[in-house]
Length: 301
Image (cartoon, rainbow, N blue to C red; front, side, top):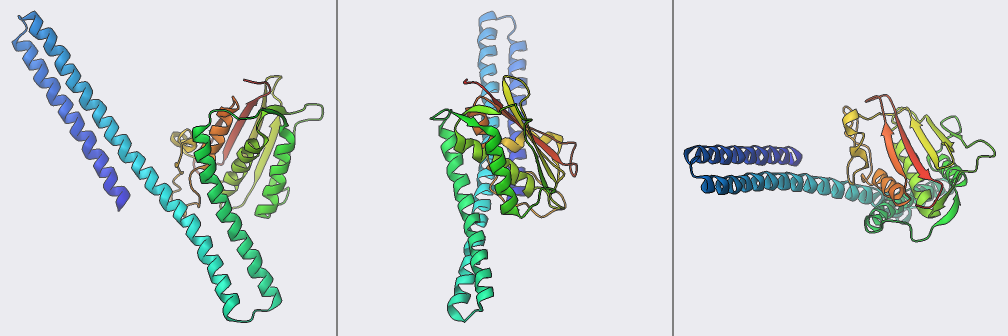
């Protein structure tokens, strides 16, 4: 209901601004025609009415952007609230159960394991929010070190397999060929975060079964290329660039909304840019999977 009302507000302000600009243009044109013989007045009138029209257009654009930004912020707050509230409620339920009645040892261990999973989910959400805020203020890594990017990717793949209970058939990794050292200059922690977010995002948007191929290449002496290809939900072509914006989340028709804060790919893009690289996505459309490519330079920028 709230999103629908805001879309109506956007349509109203856009229509109102266009109408005001059209009226100003019509009045200005009529005045110029009536006073065409008076050169100075016509000149000043053109400047005056041009300024009015430009002001109306800019004001309308600003209002529409603010409405959309507020909508994204509300969506982000709702997502974060859900991501925090759900595991907290789950942990509380397990603790209350353990407090109120005796539980067999096997079930007790199961409760502990579930609480650890919920705690990891809480930590991931908090870290995503803090990381996004830090990256928004920082343009480049504070310390540039030689990093074996192949080792970083290998660690992230192993961690993703453990975290999401996947085997090599579900999450396949093709490292760079022997003799081609995928070394870059940058912050190892940030690079680890970027790769982890790419893998988690691929898993998250594979609702019908996880089949992910990770490939690392040293394309030339200048760059290292990481491709993460999934066979999941896919992305419409008009959304391929938007998915890297802060708070933006792909709308999946006919499916339950995917959990998350909308910060994962924004963080990846921020890290890629701070290292002088880039990230982009390719997809043939909904239901046809997605390939996300991360390119990093092998030299200082």
